Image 1 (cartoon, helix red, strand yellow):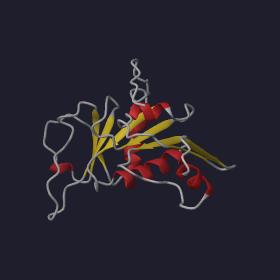
Image 2 (cartoon, helix red, strand yellow):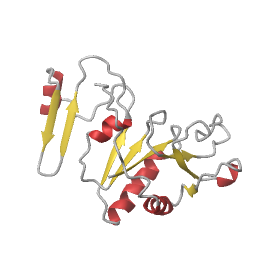
Image 3 (cartoon, one colour):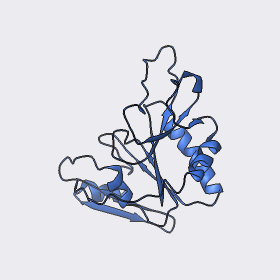
Image 4 (cartoon, one colour):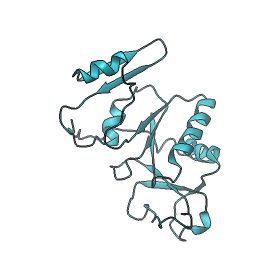
Length: 187
């Protein structure tokens, strides 16, 4: 499996570009999984449905399966340290071709594409993350002219997701995922 993260500020367009990248990879025959960092208390279950009722009754895990999909929900008994991107990748089916990781901008050694948009006039400035994150391997932006000169990273057009996928394919060997040798226990 190849794995790459997509990091950027909220509102930069990470989810939108990932939707397009997923579609293009699928059209090219790839199996794709996504790991998404969520904030605080989120829910994917519908109140009143059986799985929701089981979870609310105190089940540690609820696995919902049909002939079309499977979803696993796990309740922590106490707040946990946030799992790393590597912890989440370990949970995925190892037969996928690509694992796309959205968020985890402060997380470990996973190679990342920085998603950066020029802030609108009424928005506060957003500094670029690549100078402080050595794991950023490319920048996808809608305004390449706004980037400082001399950064040495590939600049991809955020509005041309096929270009981003082409770059990913060209760099597939370096994006081949290898789990860290030291397993961190965050659970």
